[in-house]
Amino acid sequence: MRRAALLQDRRMQKFEDVLSLWDRGELSMAEAGELVGMSERQFRRYRDRYEDDGLAGLVDRRLGKPSWRRVPERDVLRALELYRDVYRGWNVKHFHEHLVRHHSFQWGYTYLKSQLHMAGLVARARRRGAHRRKRERKPCAGMMLHQDGSRAMWLSGQAGLDLIVTMDDATSTIYSAFLIEEEGTVSTLQALLEVFGTHGLPLSLYTDRGSHYFATSTAGAAVDRERPTQVGRALERLGIEHIAAYSPEARGRSERMFGTLQDRLIKELAQQGCRDIEAANAWIRDVYLPAHNARFARPAAVPESAFVPVHDRAILVETLCVQDTRVVGRDNTVSWEGIKLQLPESPLRHHWVKARVRVHQYPDGFLALFHGPRCIARYTPQGVAIATPPTARSGTPCSPPSRRGLAAPDIVAPLAQRPALTAAARGITTPGRVGTKKRPSDRTKKQARSTNLPSAPPASA
Image (tube, rainbow, N blue to C red; front, side, top):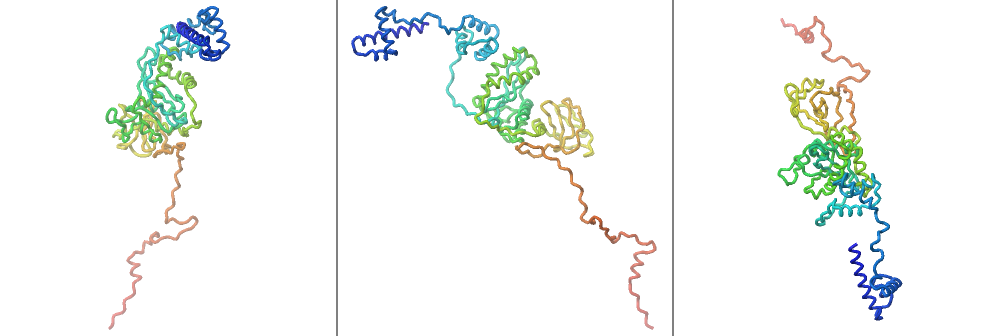
């Protein structure tokens, strides 16, 4: 109102100056109207009102009257009361969406924000920093995935938890999000197995330089590609490029997404009354993520997908797990994190003593022992043997599989035993060989030799 009154005073002064120029004949009626921003006809009306009432005739008659588009005061008070009592601490955009969805609020976001500012319920945003060049998104889904964890008090009344999020760079679609006590190798492999098993293999994965992602000799140094971690080994086996970020600004897209999640998801979980991790993860997966992606995801520049489908999930399960080599002890056991794994008897060999085996620990805690490509035993997380696995050849490949579908190798039946090179052809009876017949008992080698010798000539007289 004050600003409108000041502008009105300036317009009245300008009109007096232009009107004096018109009176002296220096300007025509059309030129005078153009200088004050009105038509010739309107300038004539203002001239008549000035001659009748002076400056009072130039006052805008709309000032002091309520606009017919004005928001009803009861709606404003209701919105302020809801924010003060129910939605305290929510950002204005999130609060406005809930007002429209659940409370039939019909007014705009900007008006609501200004009312909250004037009521002192929401502080004005700080001035933004220096302009930075934004990295363009990848053109199609599946070319790059972001994965990171954010620690916060996601569940009210509980200690801080880590939220593991895997999102697409091209569309900002969140493919996986779940709460866990602490971020690490197991949580990373669990998220990758969930995403790869549902959507396929991406071309690259973009992460920070956490110790479960990369090995670094000193803090802040470049990553050591010669010493892959469990995650690096699995990604290399699947043919996925692993990209390291060297600053939070480089991961700006995922950092902004976590800002949105910390602002919205915490309040949504509190409103739903989620108190334990399992119930919260189920609600996030089934309810929140579909609504979040519908609100924030955007279409990719290229509609084609870069994900490579995986036809055999067993290959993913055996690759996206913790693997380490052990030597079997004299009692046919293997030690793993304080647990003794007893190897069962096998028709493949008499014992497993001093044999090198590979331990697989899956994200759900279950264990398996492999001898080469063959699985020889499986165990519960407590080390109890589940069942004796079949002795048939395992379908897990020994060499890195091709990215073209990662099709499981066909198990070829063993070939029939070839006949010896000296064996006779079928249906042909061969003569007996020398030395195969038994000699008569009354015949010796000495007698046979004497019969073949010539007789001696008679002596002369």
